[in-house]
Image 1: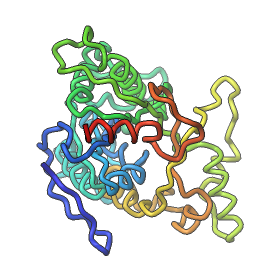
Image 2: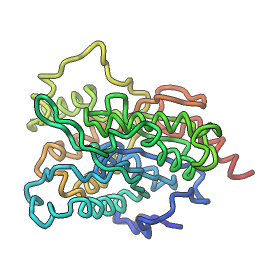
Image 3: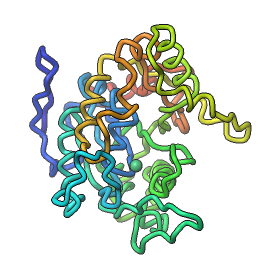
Image 4: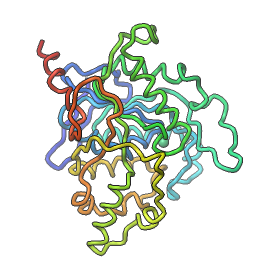
Length: 322
Ligand SMILES: [Zn+2]
């Protein structure tokens, strides 16, 4: 059993440990699972949303498919021999800190990072890595985690992975597989009691409407925008319009925690980078939400939504009170 509370200063008291079992908390009728490829992905996609729901009493579990062992060290200050010597352990410690800041639970599913292949032609993926696993092998631990935690809502990546890392694309595939198979007693019969999640969303983080709104608000305030070149070079591909935004979750009060969690992944993020170049007031004024695309739903819901649990809350409450 674990508990999270926030004191008046916003600091988090957390009694969680990494080896918490991933079963649902009896006291939390609503459960949210976020499926990610690497430690740090949870802090750059949907983090403020998770922090908000966790503080509203929702049981939030991040599952991380790989250990991020093949990530580069992206922060010069952290590129030191003792860190390079055991990056996997350093990243586990960073993840534990980020999880604590967000007030969520987290579980590694034990696959090995595939690395981001670079060069022309691209080198082959390393033997045994996550992206090379057959779908059933890759999805099995996630199916088990879904049946154990019993989330109503799952967050994951779209078919392009959000960005073209082989682990992200694979992450999308296993998330779909788990959403479809977890409720079917004939599939993965050795992975626990069937559970059908109600909704599956894709993260929609770097979409044009948001970047444009932030960019314009910065120009209006006479602040240099980090998105100038990005937007100038933006090519709208009619064949890949990007996921439709169906759901905007207000979470500006948690942007600070999101940034703290991201900074906890110190090997992966440069504090001077453009991630932190947009002042908080600009974000709050121009785009105070995190955004999602409702990809699958087995419940009725009216779009656009402002709540991931729309269409789920009442039936979840009834089940607990019965
Ligand atoms: Zn990643």
